[in-house]
Length: 419
Ligand code: EPU
Image (cartoon, rainbow, N blue to C red; front, side, top):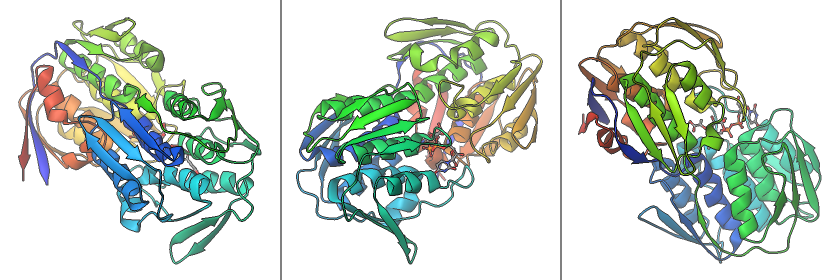
């Protein structure tokens, strides 16, 4: 078990490059399966979830190498259509391989990804959509057995909620399906556009990403390509929160302000100056932070649930009362009790969190229990007086490349130790 020892108090400063996006890299790696040739993905973050996705590709028969943030996947030959249970359990988002494996081989066996730290994570929408496309899905001793006896067929699918993973799975299943698939109420997240951009470069015909109606004209075959994973908008928001919590200023290289259109105004409401440029964002948080009125997490382009915890960490120090409403996941306030150990004043009831700003936090022993909640504790610790011991770093490693190096590069004093 590894933990971080974070000595707080220094203002964040300097310039830092934002890592590649985890939530884009994972579906892109699933997409490599469909290429049927060699694909090179640059700017791929070195994260435990990404390594797990590479292991899934290897299990399916792909040749996969990872060096210096570049993954090369050769999917010319696929030898298996089963994702091992251990890997399904390791990473909930492995469900995104279902559409890709089914699209490539016509069958797929995998186990239910099950619940996770954020509460129940049903996959009913994924399964219903694939059934609409002609998949036959049965359960066998905990395994989901999917076949498509007459091949996958394009159809019109209306989602009851713009689920990110479901939209990705349908796109992955549809690119090699017969005819046109249209998704109504599709997720509009930038990661969906990244997936479509990648698949189109491989020869797919996907239109409308980012608009809510996505159409995919099936093609007979794809080919490999070279592509760069988009910058991680949540890692950018986390660094912005670190600047806010420490009263610092940061230049975020590669950060795309267009992807942060609902996040930037929140930092501005807190009193930070945010200056977007073509290839970077500059944030200055020299003034005392102010509370925000009501922050509601919503599907894109609304405020992202993945940035809720890190923004909350900064708001604990803001003057006044802030309110957050978490609309996407049931169990996404597990960082709250730990922030309270650091001196924060937060009350939660159901979806709502009320944060009374306390001016300053102090270091304490705290424990991460999910990825973004863990990052929020690191942000809070950067802005706290004294030393914080943050346990369960493995959750943070799922989404942030060497968080201690990143925080030290912006002026932090962070050590990783083995406990
Ligand atoms: N949902 C269902 N049934 C389904 C699918 C989803 O009820 O079949 C529900 C979920 O339980 C949840 C809501 O719909 O309440 C949203 O789920 P969605 O499918 O949109 O999320 P996801 O694809 O499982 C991705 C990200 C999450 C991010 C969400 C929302 C990846 C690998 N994961 O998850 O990222 O929070 O979209 O934006 O892309 C993270 O990075 O920390 C993270 C959890």
